[in-house]
Image 1 (tube, helix red, strand yellow):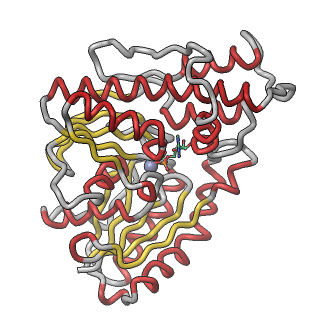
Image 2: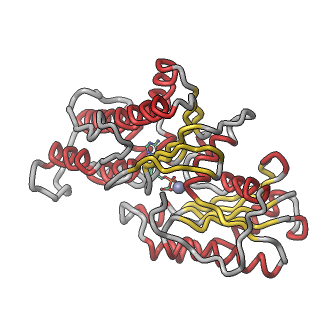
Amino acid sequence: MPILTIESTCDETAAAVIGDDAAVLGQCIATQEKLHEQFRGVVPEVAARAHLERILPVIDTAIRAAGVTPDDLTAIAVADRPGLAGSLLVGVVAAKTLAMAWNKPLVAINHLHAHLYACQLATDQVVYPCIGMVVSGGHTSLYRCDSPLDLEYLGGTIDDAAGEAFDKVAAMLSLGFPGGPAVSRLAAKGDREAHSFPRSMIRDDHFNFSFSGLKTAVRYAIVGPGQQDFSKVDLAEDAKADLCASFEAAVVDVLVAKCARAVRKFGVGRLIVGGGVAANGYLRSRLESAAQRDGFSVVIAPMDLCTDNAVMGAIAIEKIKRGDFAGLDLDITPGLQR
Ligand code: KG4
Ligand code: ZN
């Protein structure tokens, strides 16, 4: 049964060996955070080159950790969409090469569907059908999910993703990259009502999001309208904490309101949430409270499966059950996927 899963959509190079019942037999993640920190964001060219250096050692480490040999593998799965073109290409070419060399079938994984499948890995109960929200650095999207592979796009961000907004606010406050964890840590010490930041489209009867106005409002609160220069910003820790807390409250209010609305509208009674921002403690607790209040169940991806990883590639098992294999002509699909 063991399958090899490969993930290289953005800035983590990851591989895992998944056994029966989606058991993780071995895995390895090489993060590129240090490489991108100086640029306060992921630089696609730097990411692609780093993937190239790491992909084979990462795969080798995962296979050794699992105590299996390539002969034991029954398939090789790889995330082929969406993501940065150069990053995707490294994973897909590696997977195709190994599939050919080792004579194994190839499976293509949608990275967003995999982020949601991380929730299924958290519980023995079947979580589908449900409403699914992916909140990451690249996406903020809501789906109606009939099964792991049958998803209907309900709406998503029309500008920045939620994680991107966290990263930009962190950059404005010189909190490092990636910004989510740092903003969240400071937010816990701040006053969520210190600033009244916009909650765009929170009451609108659709499932789109917009976070660019919020980002601009935070910028105005730091340097004033029309200013871009953050180099002279010298805020006290308390002031930074209040900005982070008020910003985080605005993002979370909108995410929770839209999820609750979708669960109500489609009457599915269950919500699943995955992606890097799902690691946010305040979002997790607010989702739990909303679920209790409105009487639906919520399954949030386990902390170690929120940010990019290859374990969530276990969704490949669902594709294998359907006989849904890719050919060796598999190409990348970088574009924004719904
Ligand atoms: O899912 P992911 O690893 O990559 C994408 O597919 O985009 O998500 C990364 C994003 C980054 O923007 C990061 O700042 C954010 O997830 N993130 C968080 C937290 N941990 C990671 N955002 C808010 N709170 C956190 N604790
Ligand atoms: Zn991701």
